[in-house]
Image 1: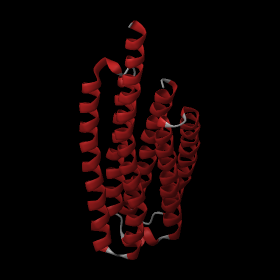
Image 2: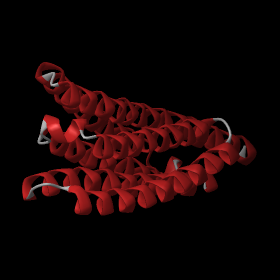
Image 3: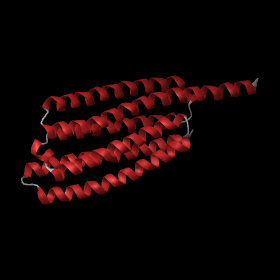
Length: 223
């Protein structure tokens, strides 16, 4: 009888973990969707397509609403499973870390919307921002793969999280190069501030991405 109870408890924990991880994965997928929109927005700014810029900002806003709804669903799920899930605090930390990326995605989207078209078209600025956004998308994509792997292969989840760390390091290096370029080539104070703000917001987003990758690693180790 005792053995039957133990098996039932183990099965309950497995099912609870599966349900919560699925919600976390849905959250992460929407974060990745929004990150990809950032590059679309920048290209629209450079092309002078204001309607597309507004559409990109709206897409980011809708994705953020989805993530908040999913976070609420995750909290409800965690409250229902109670003590069945041993590492539920780690799950919550992971969810908050993933959601934290969104605050910075919003910041990047807004600060890019303040760029003058001439600044976005400037080859030196454009190359740097496009490269940083590409690295950010790559990093968030790897983070998405890490969280997806939590329910399949925890070793893979840890491996993908380590790749996020490498990408974050590349972003940090490119960010410093970009700031140095802006300081040398900006023709006025407004250009200096707006371009530098965009670069800083991307770098800040990468820092939070790394926090989420660390949270994914902790989750993988506890599974």
